[in-house]
Length: 317
Image (cartoon, rainbow, N blue to C red; front, side, top):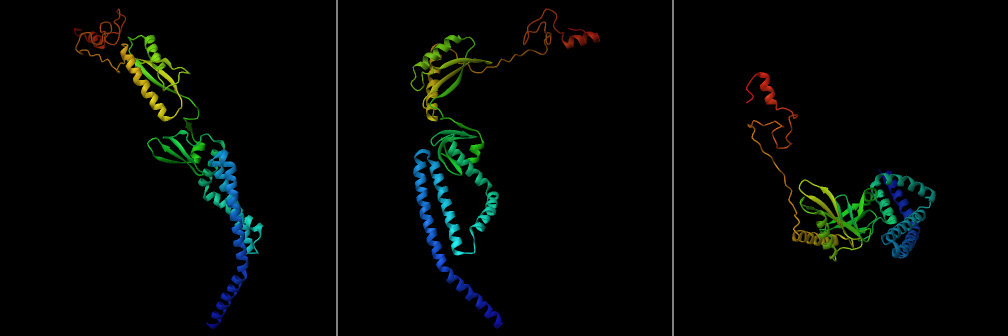
């Protein structure tokens, strides 16, 4: 028992001597790490100033990457100072194996990180653009390394992973300075199409919320069940959501008032239902019955009940 206690005490003393001997190296490593931290901070500020004036978020991203790389190098140098037996070659080999493990463990995070870098480089959309991603539509507020922040029109914040934006379909509604809107207006079949077109075009010519170059258009697009559909197309500038709603509100109100003032009908959907008495003698006789088909001259198919009555010898009447 006493021997075991002596061995334990010797080991504790040896550890204490090693710690005391390593204290100078630890202090030197801390000083070196502090120097690398200052360099990393200065490098981050320099990169953000150089890139930030041109690329915005891309400058912050590269600044963080530069700072992280310098700090990682400082930690490696500090480890070699504290533990002289550790060589740079062994550290880099350990980082290689650990990098593969980290890559598998954080695959989704790294995928979003790479997608964020590519989005910032290619810039398919920018801060302030209004985009549509799946069921989400709103204004881009921030493009981060991992995700993009979108503010919807009803003031909700949506965080979308960058990988979804980079690999999916994105509609940028403010990519160009002007945007075309359209709406279908139905007029009655008894109304004159040329007159309706002229009334709509004259109405749109006096509106200030839409562009007159390109000029608004009115096209016949469908002969529907209860109306002749005219497609009204016009351009707006700027192409933001509020401007689109304001222009559509004024266009539709003015078109409705103008068409009704000129006696042009705006018909409701209607459906015609034809009833006939199933006990009529002409029921099923296409030569005599008028509902649904024209009367023939005798070449129409005979009603089945009449043919059956003749075969059985019964009175057809």
